[in-house]
Length: 550
Ligand code: ADP
Ligand code: ZN
Image (tube, rainbow, N blue to C red; front, side, top):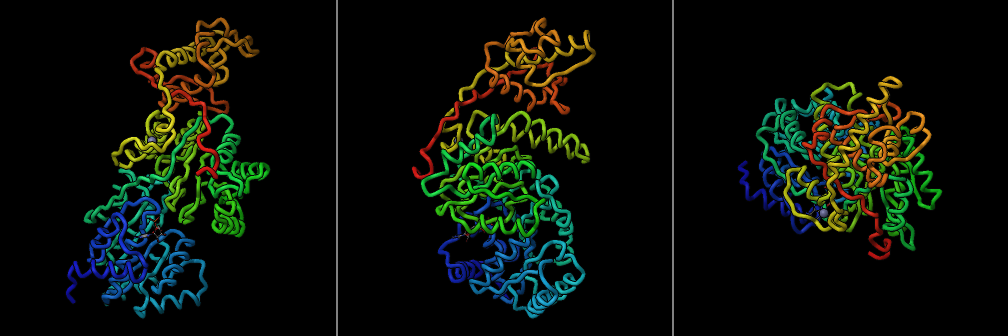
């Protein structure tokens, strides 16, 4: 039958209103739906919470009603499939999933519904989609013109530049060859240029139209603080910003290791904050219980703080998460954006708060260096880490930097730490040269007296500030020409200078004790060819009078 485009859009609007009860499409939704419903491919980049699901659910319903059959949704997450199918059935749309959590009977029931043509949406994991059994059924539906659409959710999983690459996603590249003429829509909330190009290439979406929504999440306030005593800093943050007479808000605290997750959760509980640990090392049943409690308990009733590794969060749709805190540096900006994006999905004010310090930079660099991956991969990972460090060290608007990373131009937001409390900027070039020459002197001096020797940050700063410690006496470092040349700066300022120099790769920190050596590029700084501008560490003022004040 003829299928004029404007009739599709009219039908889509009716579905939106009648089935989902929404008066209008949001943002790019209408353009995407219009494009997909009439049978074209699309790559949709929309931030979390913007409403990606409707971009394929509405076309699925319209196309099913027009006799075009079932839409297959590829999704990596069983929990997410469950929720989506439940929500669809609730509004009277026949949907089902096939995954490993099901018994044989249940799966066969779904298969019957699929083959009967009654099913509107079928959710499957990528590995399931590729099984000969399901492929056979889809081929048969395709031959009868009953395969309406493929929707590939979390499409960044196809890219190994992304932060949650999934091997099984690679197989999806054959969909368009196997099922020619079936439109495909790929969706993701996170993709920089690199990842985007990868998605297009690997999913063979060269002909797809690209839809990019603004990634701005204006209700999220970004704050990045220097790490000194991270657990206490976190507690301070929660108490100042997210606690009121009725308990504390729901929030997520990300840590870099399972051990730290356990420690931090226990510690918060001791301090009277209800916290639960979540990481892949916990028993599946316990994980589910913790997740359920976190999801159920609303902020207004005194929420739960979920302390987790990045194993937690994908597909979690809890609207009233009031803060996401990072005690350790994420791998890159995409990770940071996605994790912080779990805050404030209801549009109400929320915080993205992170502490970061020198050890974070060193650890991440080491993880990249020591990974078994190829050089090209490592190079990309390093440049991604650098972009995140630039964001963390930036004295300018965090949001502008964040959005710029995703290719979006914007102006200072007024809702991040740097906009609210502009940090003073100082020219640290001289300080950087002092620091570098001090490391240089260590090497020279050590060579003469003890054989090559390098030292860590603490000792370096003691020498610069002219402190006579046991170690200084032991190594005769008071004799160095650099001893005491940095008495004008505080220890904290020196740490900031050093962190920046490590972040920029002029100083290498390695080994168990993070001992410091000069990189080749340090020469340019020593010669004064490179300027080093730093943000003045702020005093960390309390910004609001607790959660009751908002
Ligand atoms: P995403 O997958 O992009 O993170 P969802 O598809 O889960 O986002 O949608 C986020 C929320 O926004 C959901 O609660 C959804 O019902 C709601 N929503 C989506 N589109 C609209 C719309 N056009 N009007 C009103 N609410 C919408
Ligand atoms: Zn800002």
